Image 1 (cartoon, rainbow, N blue to C red):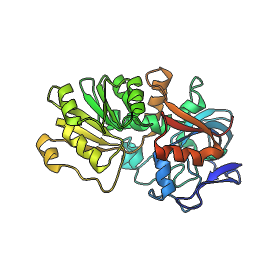
Image 2 (image 1 turned 60 degrees about the vertical axis):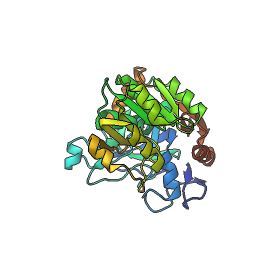
Image 3 (image 1 turned 135 degrees about the vertical axis):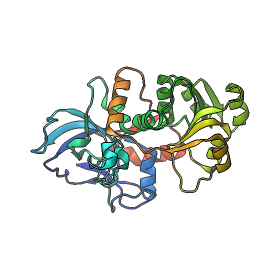
Image 4 (image 1 turned 135 degrees about the horizontal axis):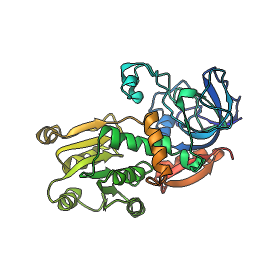
Length: 341
């Protein structure tokens, strides 16, 4: 089979002909039809995210078709169209029992991280990671659900508990995650302020339902935000940038009893601990999405409550070009690789 293989950090992935993977008794073989491309894939490429020893086939946002099953597989059959939850939790630790699968104490790995992923024609997947794909959702659309949509659902619904009286600011809201986060926040009934740095992204945020859009390069955010919120500040900031300057601006617009939700991450960001103390600001980290989050997001897409925003669709062998587009920020939504028809 064809696969795009990471053999050396920071160097182009190489299109290789490799063996179709073996699969175990509790696993299935999936023909990959589409795979989303994520900013985390860039971090893996750079060597900034721990993964298995190279070589590695990345790709953790996968939609495809079951073509073979292990002898213990009971809930899926050959021909089933599926979406993959890329975390492989143990299912029995205290965190798994509480439904917090992405912080499982006994991870068995992640697709595209510790295990080879979806930038290939076939991938072996544990049965417990499979979700039936609704027929009315295309493979291209489904590929962005496990991360680009479900990560935002997990952040807003599970972690921040956004409600209909909230004003939510999306810092970096014009990217592949933020555009879906805006839609989820609107579905929850919140008012949304979208912040980004280009006219193109401001327009995309408007199209996705943002009530107010601000250019971080050309406007002083606190003045505009406090004017819009009648001096109260926002109830929640969702950080899709997490640079020192963006977090500084986020703290300046947060009101009393508010939440800062860190979707993006950096080990070197500082924050105003005094303001956090005086205003009792909750700082919430959030990690990807669990299987139940993904299932709920598939329902939202099926019902038309959230629209997958696809920026570009490329072929498998064009993945290095796709990485370049992602680095340059030249996308109007999420990047998806069409792997097989």
